[in-house]
Length: 223
Image 1: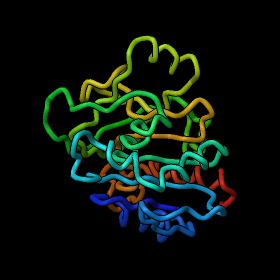
Image 2 (image 1 turned 120 degrees about the horizontal axis):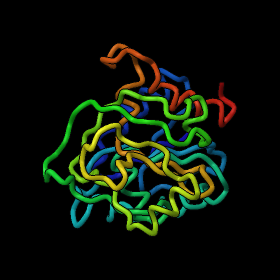
Image 3 (image 1 turned 60 degrees about the vertical axis):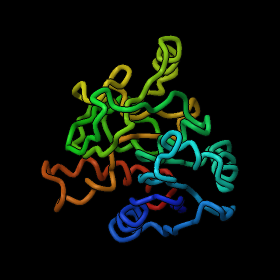
Image 4 (image 1 turned 180 degrees about the vertical axis):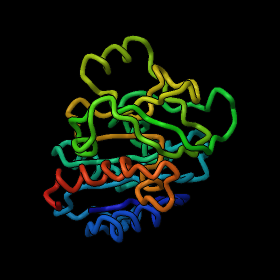
């Protein structure tokens, strides 16, 4: 499994720790100018502030050399996960629909919230139940997911809404916190599952957030 590191990524080591030490994946870091090995079974784009969020969050990173390999993995149906800034990069590449705008408060948000599972048929949600609630932290300034009404209807029709916030947290369209592509193998989400997958640091102590990575274990046959 690959974890892509861009200039400004700051959650790559957190993600590596959770995937390698907690869930025992064979995970490795890959610099954004490298090529991805053809034998990778999944790739994660972690959170951070790539290129200092210059111009627009994720837009410069979306032109990195490694993106072409990520697109090929997505086209092959392999699991791809983008978290926070990783989600922003995935929408900037066009792999996922929509855009991420500044929160309607115009402030950086760092807090715990809850998600509702709206699609449990992805490589990252197959161990979760429909409408199950997940305790998870958010940390972003440009986390407001936006699509026009036509695209929103398309997302609903194609079952591409993966997570919704339980509260009106940042002005996101239809309270959307995460979406997938039509093929369901690429998921982008603003909240940080790697910061809630160990019960020691999860105030809800529910263990439900860890099922995102447990689902991936099943999807790639690592369970």
